[in-house]
Length: 548
Image (tube, rainbow, N blue to C red; front, side, top):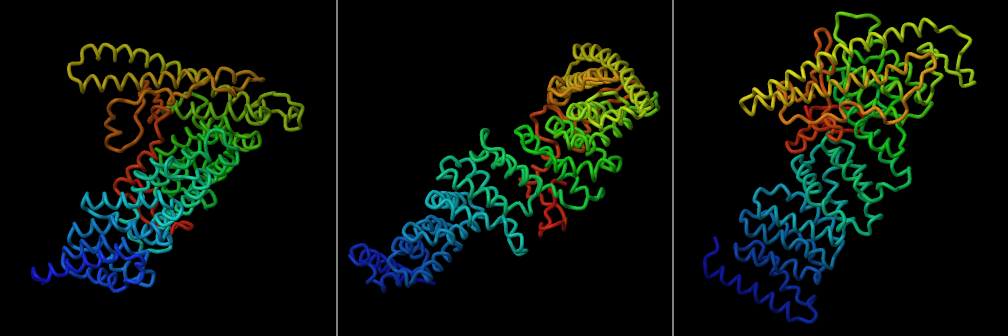
């Protein structure tokens, strides 16, 4: 324990060291004074606070003492006394002002200090990091990302990793216009850092990084197509499209469907969806029945939204699988089982867009007589039974859709009466949601009728434009969740329930709303939600898609 007189004497000496160093023309000659300042880091509370100011101030003049000075200062950052820690943290950027080679080391330490619990201390860390990012953005980002990408080091502290991720998301990304300069060079640098970090991420983390990359100027609206394709390749890598598919691997299914959804905007911008669709066609459609029920609709909706951007070659390969599924969900005769109208809507939409790209492929699949002059027309073969079968299925689903629309229209009138009689806000909200679901159901059935009618001709015109607005793209997000949604986090129920036919069991809601899989994954970021081991490929720590 240092008594008052000794404490006062130590402080006095420290002020003397500081004054002599301030006045000296060649400060490097005052080695003993600087050594005295370093020793003070082991002294009293007041001495440590003063040392925390003086060590970085004169650091550049004593390169031979640099290691001792830095270590002493780092010790001050871990002191029990909050005031000492905060003072030491504020001084860290000063080490790099004239000795930029220390930026990486100091940023690495500050990254570890992001786990601070006290607000004033955490604020000091944030300010110090932003100061160093402004001084040397490339070195600082590289040091920060090492805390994220260390997949080969099981000892990496997960709490540090999460805090660094949150700092990058909340402090760095919003300031990208200010920090990422020179723009193209630094944006390219951070893109490469992000790519390295994607070896082992949750769904939430991946979406966060993709949203950030999309916002960079190098991936903006008018960039060359190869830049857009680069983003698709990043998503393809995350989807594990080179992995052997296992229908019991729910994590991989979630990852695949979420990644396909995230890729949709880039298909619109001209990137190829070939690898995704080939994987789906090769590995997934033939085991469609074995997929988890809630994933089937996600997959079909994503396929529908991808179909307008599919190449003729891929369309020809995918069409047989789509027709096979269409026949499964459009029964030839009235059956006891319910018809899932949203499945049918998805598949008809996909069928039209694929067939538009390669019309004569439908001759051998549906018995049409489309002439293109190519051998693939197969006009010399008799596919009349296929035509009869397909058109009977179309007629049956039309009849069911009309009957369902009649019941839905009657239901809408009943909802109107119930709304007028409703007394409580809860009752009104419930009825409002039922009306919205009924409206979506009517859109679904209307779309089915619009898409089946042209297909009765032996020379049909396939719809290849955007005149059909998919029902879930127009639906209004319900103001209150349904009981099922609240309990299981699943898609909102769509009330297309006739006496024997139910339409969509789950609806995506507004087309601008993110895919439910990705939304649930987002929950993982705030709670650090990395699920159990995956053990696939390079993802060493096995975070999984991270929302279950």
